[in-house]
Picture (cartoon, rainbow, N blue to C red):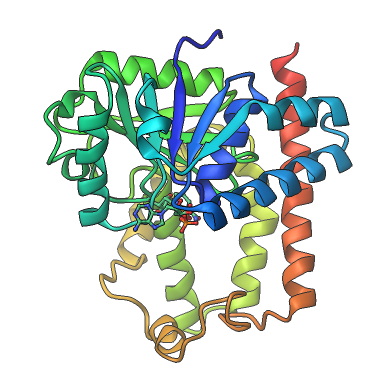
Length: 316
Ligand SMILES: NC(=O)c1ccc[n+]([C@@H]2O[C@H](COP(=O)([O-])OP(=O)(O)OC[C@H]3O[C@@H](n4cnc5c(N)ncnc54)[C@H](O)[C@@H]3O)[C@@H](O)[C@H]2O)c1
């Protein structure tokens, strides 16, 4: 699908630089704003490392890597980055007040029909656009980490978002070779995180009640749902299993599932003691540098297999 938008990304952190890479890879020239030189240099290093890894996986060659790099330009002037854009994706820190003020700035700097999209993980689209004069041109486009490898982008409609804004966002996301889903209502957690946290709540409930160990819960997901969900979502899975059987299971099982509203004690203990996962060396698991590198590699290998499959299907 050919792209008509002039794209800028405001914010060059973990998400900003990988969204930019995604756009450039799809043939879209993109401008990226970073707060200062150090921020921009980190983003450039991130782009280089990801591109090099993709060359290593033989997804593309050195010439394509250079083309992609040259399609991304960086600046520390927000005005320069967004003033001639028709579509801006904001990827600044996850803080409502900061995003509201940032959107107000973008609203003043951008042309009237420029679309302002937030990459927020879970804040409200309506609230983020509250200080702008044209909330109909604001929405959420939520890329998943790592943005250059995960196909899903949730396109979330705010209370005032116009149909045209939604259509233009869907067109751009498809042109970036991503798989958009439309979230029709401005709900916290959108779709993906609501599903993820429903599973995570149940996983913790099972361990908390000593029904299975944490390692076995992780294994149960990896070797059953994880495999199948790559092909069939929950509705199709239920259809294929037979709805009569699955309605019967629902009738006795729903009652027993967790409806807990607070953080589970084990997680609270870990967080209260500063154990956040790989970044502190301990979370539910012990994260030595070797184990962290191993798991990152395994996950990347798997995502690359899917990426190659998606690319093959797209070229059919
Ligand atoms: N990291 C993830 O797993 C992930 C996944 C999906 C969505 N998101 C969302 O994407 C957005 C960006 O997250 P990230 O992980 O890239 O963050 P990050 O901290 O890596 O990068 C944020 C970038 O914003 C800019 N910035 C920093 N301080 C700023 C300030 N005070 N005012 C304006 N700009 C500032 C800088 O360019 C910085 O690199 C957040 O809304 C986050 O919730 C993150």
